Length: 408
Image 1 (cartoon, helix red, strand yellow):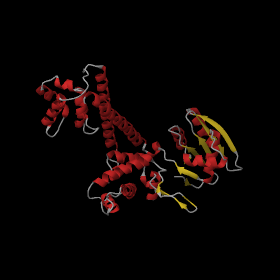
Image 2 (cartoon, helix red, strand yellow):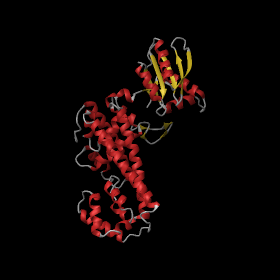
Image 3 (cartoon, rainbow, N blue to C red):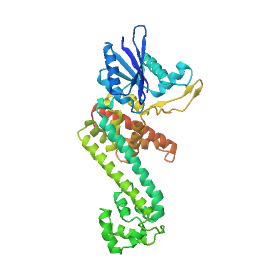
């Protein structure tokens, strides 16, 4: 992922080791390699003081730093708005360079600042794209919050299926559907145990359950099946008023709340990206739905900044790498030294596209596994190839501004 950039002639190099509360800054002037060290606290006066002192130098400023959680974002944005050129240092490259320069694995902030300065000097840096300046900060927050809520919802859903239902209503699990089935959660929130159902006459239960179930094919038969299931349930005989059922209902309410929050985020994303041309182009690619398109734009930003699709594949960690030494040559496989969220998004999109009809992804999968239908390893390699193809297609449609064409 590290790319060599030429260092501007006569530029003052500024290396910053980022942390939560303070930053170690090392400034090197071009004449004689004179250095100045300073400590900058994570406060607005110190940030302003650093920007003012760098501006007073009166020369081009090149700032390099290693991303540290989100602690680097505020200072990086302050320096970027002050007009300085920023470069990002790969964490892996920084660690390897530190070990090589100092012949050891020990580290501290001043030492890291020296290594960052060395990497700035030789140009072993990456371009830094600030999300706020690039206009993708809102997209990143939408995407990451959606992922957080989806994970919490899935965890809560699994807790209901594997803990509460086996104890208090085992048989109703076969009506569960998927984790987007809010009707099912609404039903068991009102009727968490078989006893809460059988306490009513069949007609009374149907009347109460009818608005909860929503629109369903053979709705009456479904509700009657649930009633019959409750009558023959093996559930633990726990009273509906017990603390255990109160906790069960609390978890159900949490799951329903997460579903509402997720749906709200998807609505906001649709409104935010309604007129986004790149979003519309990505949506026309098989397998890329609203959330996948949002994630691609949030993580990659403007795909046009990648001059060639190989650069984008490397950014995603979908480039091939081989370990070779002497007569030994290892297996060629994905480097995975890139954005894991993008890699996962394209993998999921490829899985969906391969199950659809009349597109080049399914056609490529068929050609790849022809004659080897039962070979799981070959199919895995085929899906990896489809994932890389999905990334190439996404880059191509955005870069050229043309819609996806299935077989051209």
